[in-house]
Structures are given as structure tokens and as C-alpha cells.
Image (cartoon, rainbow, N blue to C red; front, side, top):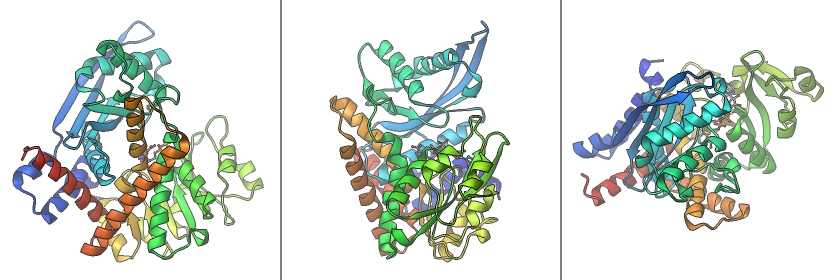
Length: 428
Ligand code: NAD
């Protein structure tokens, strides 16, 4: 793979440049949209439990807020880089635009490993993050959310610090809060369910009955679990799923030709994060190498773990039976695969459409917080289904009309909406 594939910011810019060229955008518009409009790089000093002070490097990047306040998670990761945060903030702009929610794109990150920090140290880090940039955050400015290795508790500490500084209650300044403390019902399921709402629409277009389809999936985290649950509920057969085994630090694919059961898969996890192989065998599951998920004879592949998993090198391993790839993860396919996938006549649902259920539900959370009126779960999920299926339909129609790939069509719709906003505002 080329170096470009490893730099998410370069990837994000290359994807934008391609569509900017197709749309013949003005030079000034291109320059505005191919980079973030605002970047905060800052340090957070944290008093550690042993009395020492540790300084963490952090970022909050706003790619574009022409369609509404910036929206995006805050990641805690030891290998966080500014280019990852830049790319993710840009993808958030397109993601919000493609599902037509009135938000822009942002992202944050702290270079740290929360697994090595005590609860108190994590709380001081979260509060420190907000203290350093509170003036740039807020329900009308920039709305943060959980992301890699951050959770609802981190969000609540950040909210509390913000409200202490601002002197009031502003629950819409952050999403992903616990239910009962401003969180929305349905958020846990939203991304995985959104993937399957898109898949349902896609199968309709391909005249395939979900009940006669099979899936192989990578990952068994939040997104994968709820996508798997809904897919099985609708009658599909999940044949294989790959996941990590923390005891060995490896990955394995768990397969059962007659179909996997999500609750059984959950029970296979041992207390130390490993896989109970004996129990798996008793239940009729085979344990295969970690990368075996990609070479299964199934109709649908759902990468729901990491970026850069489908590369030109592994593409030949994909069975000729595969008709659909649902990009549940962010960036699971390297850009140099797109044309090859299309040549193979595989229908690809691009990540920023496929996994937009999460941000759509976060938007619903913000709306509920701002109005101080909370919806029941059915209402949240029916609105989510409506939004996701509408978004899929618009992208599909454009792809058909203009003979574009689904990814290019999604980019065209998203970028046009943002270009329209910056033009109407008179920014370009
Ligand atoms: P998660 O941390 O809950 O789960 C990730 C899963 O992937 C874990 O089960 C992990 O064991 C597994 N995994 C990691 N490396 C693997 C490998 N090499 N092979 C097989 N499995 C592996 O994360 P998540 O929230 O489910 O997110 C998954 C993907 O979806 C990420 O790309 C994330 O950015 C994207 N995403 C998540 C959301 C959301 O709402 N959670 C929204 C949009 C996009």
C-alpha cells in the first residue's frame, strides 16, 4: 500500500479533490473545504495520583460549520495524530451533510491511554480539556461526543465542567450522555441499526430478500453487535464474525454455517477478554484465523472494526458470491480498492452514509436536550429509520442517474450541500 493510504488526512483530501474536480468547484471553495477552518492544539496539565504533573497533548478541530454547529467525538488514544483528527473532522462534515442534519464537522483527540489512568486522573483530564477550550464549545458552536476510548462518564465530566464555567445548564453542548442525564434512548443501537436500514434499502434495489442472505462481519463491538442483532431479527444468517482475543492479543473468526447467535457470541467472552474456545466448540462454532472473515462464501461483508481492512492485496480473497459491502467502520476500504470493487459489481455502501445512524441519533439527543423533552425509544428509532432510508435513497438515485459509485454519489450530495451553505453565507 502507498504511504497515502496510511495518512487519513491525505485520503480525506484526495477524496474531496476528486469530487471537487467533478463538480468543477472554484479554487477558493476548494481551498476552504479541503482543510479545517479552525484548529486548537493545546496541552492539558493533569495532577496525577502520585503527586506529579503529567502534560497531555490535545486537539479540537473544526472542519466546517456552515450548515450548523460542528459535531464530532473526542478520542483518547496513545497513537492519536493531528492528521487523524483533521481527517475525521472533515468526514464528519460530509457525514452530517449526506444525512441532511443541520450540523457541521468537528473532532477532538487527546494523546493518552485511558487504560493506564485512574478514574480520578481521567476526570481531571476531561475537565482540563474543557477548561482549555470552553469558549469554543457549546450547543451552538461545537458539540462533542464519545469516540474511541471515551464514554458517557467522560462526557458527563466534560458537561459538568462546561456548565460550571458557563454558569447554567447546557445539556446540548455534548452528546452520548447517560440516559436520564440528557442521553437519548436508542443511541446504543443507532449506528448498528442504521447500517441495517441502509442494507435493507440496498437489498430492495438488488431484488434480494434479506431472509435468503448471509453475512460475514469483522468486529464485535458496539456497531457490530447491534447490526448483527437487527440483521438476524430480520431473518438474515450471520455466518462468521471476527473479533479480538485479548488474552492472546490476536484475532479469530468465529463461524457457524447454520448461523451465529449474538447472545451466545457474547457468552464466549471470558472474564479476561479472551474467547472460550471449548465452549465455542460445544455450541458448534468453528474457530478460524482472524482474517478468515473476509474470504467467506457469503452475500454480504460488513467490516465493523477498523480502517484499511479491505486493500488491493486482500481483495482477491473476497468470494465471487459477495454482492454487497456495508462499510460500518470508518474507512475500512482503502481508496485504491474502490474501482476494483465496482468492476467486480459489488454494491458498496460507503462509510459516511452507512454508519451515520450514530451522529443522526446524537443530533436527536441534542434536539431533545435543547427542548428539554425526551422521546420514547420507538420514536427515536422510527425517526432514525426515516432519515437513514431517505439518505440512502437520495444517494442511490444520484448514483443511478449519473452512473457514479455510491461513494462518489454520497460525496457529491454532501459536498454540494456544504458548498451551497458557504456560498449562501457569502464565504466564497
Ligand atoms: P468498539 O471499540 O466497540 O468495537 C470494535 C471491535 O472491533 C471490537 O470488538 C474489537 O475487538 C474489534 N476489533 C479490533 N481490531 C480487530 C481486528 N483486527 N479484527 C477483528 N476485530 C477487531 O468500536 P465501535 O464503536 O463498534 O466502532 C467500530 C467502527 O465503527 C469504528 O471504525 C468506528 O470509528 C466506527 N463508528 C462507530 C460509531 C459508533 O456510534 N460507535 C459511529 C460511526 C462509526
